[in-house]
Each structure stands twice: as structure tokens, then as C-alpha cells.
Length: 509
Image (cartoon, rainbow, N blue to C red; front, side, top):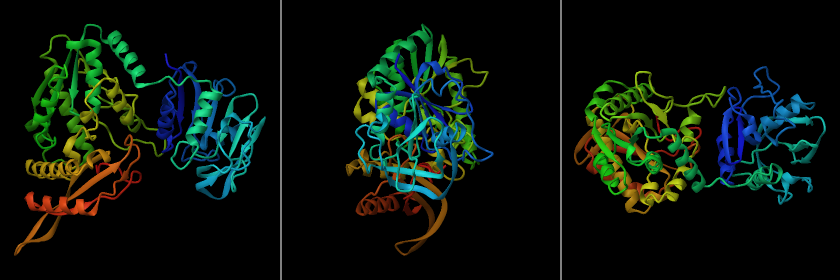
């Protein structure tokens, strides 16, 4: 069993980044909310306390019992975590006389501190807090400062406990990864042995033990997550896995046929089910995005329930759920409250006599791709852009009609094909088009038009938790815009979305 790290989440937008940085060091970690810490603490070798939008001084301060952690396990407090340790263990936290946000440089680094081994004086870090530690907790010492923050980092003598008032997980903290490495490997003594091969071997063994001779149904989407899940399960139980690819009528152009074709030769039992009419009818006159997600989720369950009854011995439903889906669907008091619901998170209704197996639910997207590579899956498939489970339903703002779906399919096809033809597809993490509930005046030839507007979206990211827009060449956007307007009847205006996540999301709904 790999050695694990527990990250206790207090609602920071950066908590997921901490997890990613830890895993980049080949150390397995899990995020659990502070208010639902239903875990075996003995199974973790080290603990990290995340940041938070809350103040430790406020009546709404988020509290946790550290009796089983402090002084017993290596502990790193980040921002709120550091201030919590200081405030409730003999120190003092006060409002900062100015908001400490942005770049800073470490000064007066204690060269004897293992936390800062091979971290040079002046190393850039990223601050994001409005409180500051005035007095350190009992039995502690300052091990680094900045120009504006006297106690930027501290340690408690003889406890392997460290607190830092900056974010080592973000890109702007140049030695942040090194600081985390020092804490995990040198202070906590963790072995960096969590690799894609180790994950695959362990997961295949666990699936064999869990499933036995039962049969499993897997909902394939043609994307990376469900494909890797399928290959993993197939290696564990072979022909006892039945894959089903459902056409919900909201796929990309020709995707139903293309996906079925791409799975040939992969050793998977795949059945295509065309339920497009059923889904579109269910979505008739529905505009609210959350209602769309719930309807689509229910429709998928209806289809899989029907198909499961045709397979003798089917007792499990497999899903390609990944960690960002799980994280965004768990509410932690504050800004980490649910952003959107996920159709593949939350279990199954009681009437459906299937248990759920989710072999990838603790992985980020880039980790899924690395596991897929270790399993020998075709790189072309692994590099496929993420596509939302509800499909084009959440890229059509407003109600769903066959006409709108056809329009968006054509627009999306032109955009994605152009990215591939221009060798830009692999430089983009996710791309797609959005059909807006907006009509505008246009001129074509001598005619006045009043037609739809579409937005193009292309972002760069690693796991979808944060993202930035891609600066596609103007000439490329010009060509794509012209081709869309000239070839897609009903569209006379194209715009390009240049919003980052946060504050926006990747999808519009």
C-alpha cells in the first residue's frame, strides 16, 4: 500500500492545486472537507491544512479537532491552516494593515530548516490573505519572513509542524514544489512511489476482488475517462464487462458512428444504443441548465436500467467519474460549495439494482491520461479534448430543439476540424462552441439577416480546475468565423470567449 497524505480542505480555491503538486511528486494524497473528516487518520503519513476564505478571528471560523494530529503526525499549515495553528495554540492573529496579496520574496530564511532546504534567499512566493500572524504559537520559531510579513513561516520545536502564510502550490511560488517536496520526503519521510503503473496494478487487483464473477455495465462516452476506465476493468474481468455507448442526440457531428468505430480492435465488448429521440423529447422546452443536467442524468439511468435487464448477471454499473467531478460535487462551507451538479456523481436510485464502481474517481484528468498511456491506449484517443457528459445540451443556452442541435454540431465540427488542420488541437486543453440565445442583424449580399450568434471557446489547463483562454492566431479565428458564417445556415455572427477560470467556468452552463 502506498504512503498517503491527507489534505484537509477549509474551502480554499487552491486546495485542488495542493493535491496536484503533491501527486506530481509521486505521492498519493486525498482531499477531505474539514467538516466531514470520516477517515482513518492512522492510514496517512502526513497532514496538510489548506487555506480558506474565512478568518480564524471571525465567529464563522472553521474549526477542526487537531488532538489526533498535532504533535503526532507531520503537519503543514498553509495560510488559514498556519493562522489556525497560531491563533488556537498560543499565538495571535490580527488583521493586516494592508491586504497581503500577490508576489513577495522570502527573506531571513533559516538555513537549518529542512522545509527550506535548497530554497534560496529572495525566492518568490504568492501571498493571498488579509490576516497576519503577529505572535507565533507556543514553542515555535520563525523560519522565514518577507518584506511585509514578519512571520511568513514558522516551525514548532520537536513536533514536525510547520506553518506558512503563502501558497506553495501556485505557479507564482517559484520554489513551492521544492518546499512541498522537502515537507513530504525529508520531514515526513514519505517514499515517492505512486506511479501510473502502481495505480493500474493496484486498481486491477481491487476490481478483481470487488467484482468477482459478476458482470459490469460501463457507460462509454468515447472520451478519455470512460475509455481508460473500460480498459482497466477489462483487464480485471475480461468479457464480463459490457460497454454501452448511448447516443443522446447531443453528441458532436457523426460522433456516434466514429466512437463505435474507434473501439474496434481494443478488445472491449461495445454495444451502441441510439436513444437520441428519447433524450431530445425529455428536454423539450427546458432552458434551466441544472434541470437539463438532472433530466439527462435521469434519462441515462433509464437507458442503462433497461439495458442492464438484458444482460444476465449484471450487478455493477461502471462510470468514468474523475476527481474534479467529485470535488466540485462536495460542498464545503464557503466558496467550495457546489459549482454545478454532475450527472455521474451521487450514486443510483434505489430501483436500479446495480452497484457503482468508479476506478478513476481519485484521479485528475492528466493522471488519467498517464494511466491510459501506461495501459497502451492509443495516444490519439488519450489526447481527445474533454467533452461534457450532458453534451451539447449545456452548450445550447436556452431550450433544446433538433434545429439548434444541428446548427451547433456544424459549428463545432468546423471549429474542431480547423484546430486539427492547423496543428492547434494538441495545444488546446478543451475547445468547443456555444449557441447563444441572441440574434443580431447581419448583411449577406444584398439581404438583411437576423440570425444566431455563436461563441467559440478554447482554454489551456491541466485538469479543468483552473483554466485560461488560448490566444489563437487572429488569422485562424478570421478563417473559422468566415467558414462558419458561410456554411452554417442560421448563424451570422461569431465571437471568441477570452474569460479565464476563475472567475468564469470553462462551459457556459
